[in-house]
Image (cartoon, rainbow, N blue to C red; front, side):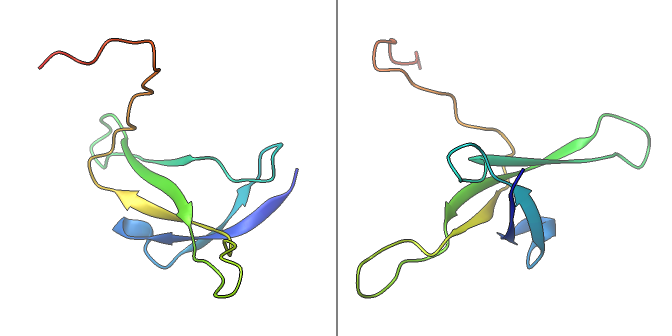
Length: 89
């Protein structure tokens, strides 16, 4: 399985570069979860990072790769299918 060195921005992993396995399409996963064990033995804290483009080239506007940015709320957004009803307030 191929992997690609991917930088992380924000949160505790800021500035780190980790090899991330690529999927069948050649892209890293959309979300990267890092479980951090609790010091008192409780449930682990999960750090959540979202994949975003690392930048674009000037001439053609192609993306230069991927990076992960930290989401402090720690929850993935729910998938909204077009045929579902809107959420109730």
